[in-house]
Image 1 (cartoon, rainbow, N blue to C red):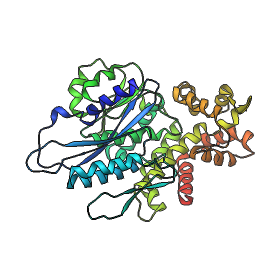
Image 2: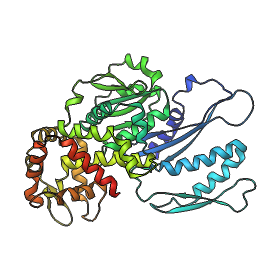
Image 3: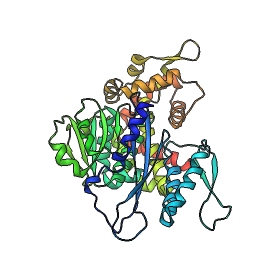
Image 4: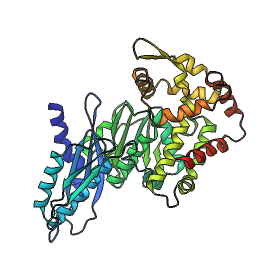
Length: 413
């Protein structure tokens, strides 16, 4: 509880990391952004914020309404804050009873909904429905934010740097751009999870954190750049989101991933809008999210989709992962070189450890796609692993193979 209390005391700094730049204004378009509080045990609390200008006359300062939760149900929180903003525009007195009803209501389970009394004048007995989707993996993700700020080439280079657990700093003019891009970038590494420091919006008062020698993904407002340049920060990928450029880098970012698979991934992402349109006549952010997610899931299927063949049953329901046998089974030299480095990361260790302890029946999207991949291997699962990678290595244009697979998946989703 003491640690939680310390975290909550820091919340105002995350809600107003740009406090020194604020002066009273008469007009302000409300903005939505989020931050993450990480505990000593690695647990995370999400802060979801709506910053708005309270109703009134003359110049005034904005307010922030912030929902803090261990669950990143951002679509649900966004609907709640829409209602808060609507009530705040009428009278501050209407916010409190609505939020009390929200707090007292049970948190909706996956795929379920709850109803809350409206508490607006003239609404009578009307209620508001709040629901959570059954699959919440991409619930708080907006891939369009990434593509509107970064070229495909730069995006893949950042992705590759995260897979090697390097230090990455995003810089942007607005809090919403920082938080959206950080959350979307972390979502790309599914089925793996970022195990290190993760601060989508870092208050300037805490900027010394970037001097840490350990891996991190951090977001900073562009106004912090002069201070950042004064700090002894080494071996960091510094990304200027506003201008789609790297302010510092290792210079090997384009050679980290297996070349042919990287080329295939690039082609799919360049044609993401066409694929999204093929899925829906009128593509929306959900269609784009599905296309991008499938592309990166398929990338990992090509790299580690055969991992289950090297899980050996042990006592009770636990299993043991045969690391050396897994790595040696890959005949593609470029994939094997990548695996030799990637398998030493904490995120790979966490991935295998979770699956050693996991019950056989639990399956996410990656496991579904991996099983589909194993079933397509020529000559059966066991004998097909080397044949598959040999075939990929010898393809004149693996991008056509990869692209065709994603088009097939999208047409059946």
